[in-house]
Image 1: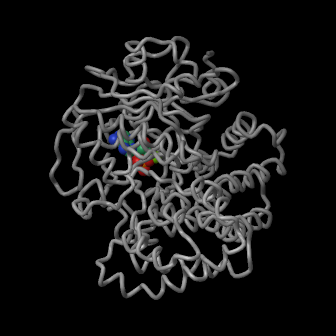
Image 2 (image 1 turned 90 degrees about the vertical axis):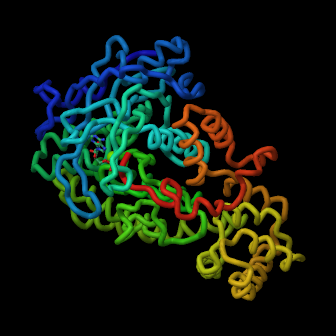
Image 3 (image 1 turned 90 degrees about the horizontal axis):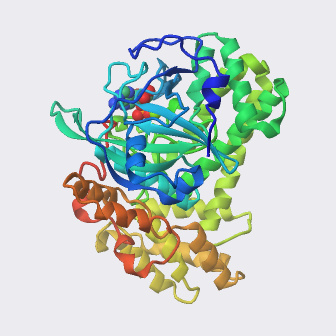
Length: 514
Ligand code: AMP
Ligand code: MG
């Protein structure tokens, strides 16, 4: 394992080293140390990832100190990154790592990894906030980023979850009821944490020199196959970010993940899912659902709007890169293609959820009708698609019973949609009549997870952990390592959301307070 410090050695940094909130110009970062925690305690660590990054051999005590911000690795200089962003459609100016500190850039067996501590104290980008994170949101990031990784969704990962021993005050519903919560830190990893907003901040300040330096760095370090910088290379870079973002969103739609805060500061330039805040998992199939109560009025970041928002965000990135490319038509054409390709690839992805690997002319309407039925009859997304592995062409009525059980409606309400299901399942039976059933089941089981981190599951783990019991964190962590496996002893997690979770904070409602 070798410390590289690539970001700080190759990019311009802030000369001011005082840790005070301010506007930082012509810089990609500011040096800042984590605030030492008063009594760090390791709740969980990720053995597999520790191996990958080359930290498997350090003692538990040393690891606890490192991942909680008590000590730094020799040869590192921790820093916070400067970036801006469009939040909920409005340019918000400078944001930056207000509570994340990059503590190491490591190279091990040819793999480069940046490690960030989230919740380890204020930085020059904290804008009046405290720089800390609470246990509940840290558990959610820790469990979900790993779950996403094992689902095959491009994502940042998590190395550890630790308590700081310090109290953090939060007003969870922003309703004037602040309370003390347990402070925690997640150590998360990615090849890089550069975001769309990292480019936007320079463009917004007409600082083309820094914009070019950062873009050249990003290409050299993370898109080196594109070659040496030129207008063509910048365009190819944009094209690849578009492709990666498209791929990421298709995965989100496949597994039923709703990010919740798709601001441009929360979109990774590597096409990784980043910043797990008020995210949620779709249970009853409602494209208008967002877990984020802060967005409940406009539902900008609802499940069904994630692709248009990705396009909107990519348009902001195109604007930011424009000074380097200066070709409006070329950029517009990439964005137009994104739209067309997304729609085509979406149908292909949805067909794979049905166990179908080829494309027919009528498949678009088969998918469209299915989505409408799922929504109208309030069907659990995960259960429905996984249970298609039990479908038999000769037993359509039986399958309607299965679908009925996966609905959140009452029996009488569901009966109203029975005919619709009969029609759709008949079309489906016809569509798959020439497909070998074993092949179909294999595709279904590899595309449709059996286990996802349902919102209430995370909430149960949080409630136990707040009382000092981490068993459920361990259990869910292990469960979600193999989301496509049957795991017969864990069937209780392959079930509809329980009724008590319907309107509960943390289950169906999540604010940005974290
Ligand atoms: P988010 O939308 O949660 O990714 O956060 C948006 C911006 O607010 C980022 O610049 C964060 O670093 C910053 N931020 C969020 N929470 C805090 C906090 N508790 N202290 C300081 N900065 C924060
Ligand atoms: Mg963020």
